[in-house]
Image (cartoon, rainbow over all chains, first blue to last red; front, side):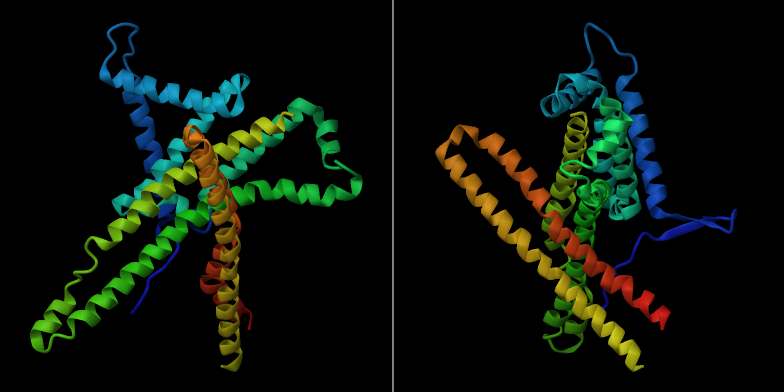
Length: 247
Length: 87
């Protein structure tokens, strides 16, 4: 029974600066961004005030949902973060769901999620400095007493790390478990049909009957539910951290 | 040879130990789900809100288990090559 679990495959190298490896993560991420951009352009071209088309109704529904999502979690004063939150949400969902097409999900690579988390961290720090001033921001590290400063700094650094690893770990655990289940089903299939003696058993043992159908149930949880859940949680945490940074 | 075997053994045992981290979230999530059932039984009309809060809390408390899982993965796929390269 051989199990093949690997990181993002490297497709090609750009031959400058000693070769920059381009992994499948990068390619799929650019593909997802292209699809999202073209989708947005298609949804929003030729908008009208009256007699709206079905396409415009979908676009309006998406925008209203995103606005309500931010409004209930952050409040009326934070509506300028609607584009940011919905962009991360769409990017996260489409990246995770790209595994359904047999591509390497970019969110199963820690660099992707860490990059998003670093962006969120920059916004959190910016919000903190803007609402308290740089002195208030630095004073916040010595919160109860100045002895707590190292722990506060650690806590600040671990915010993006925990966000990144939560998203990465959930998606990659699905990938690993799916790979293990496929290998186990193949082995079980071989063991089961080899019980039939002769050439018939060998022939049937070579055809992976058990690999049909059973992994679909897992895919329902790991691909669909987990993708939506992690995108939702990442955006939820983003909004909570940003709005609590202003206090 | 013995050193290599020792390194691999250490990595395997360590990744097994790292997955003990799964116990904590299991207990915690079960407790949270039980409390959610209580809340819904007391106020059935608040079911939607309880469900979304529960899912968020469960996914948050799952983080510690995920940390253990990531550590286990690192110990299996990254650490042996790293440590064997040091020898």
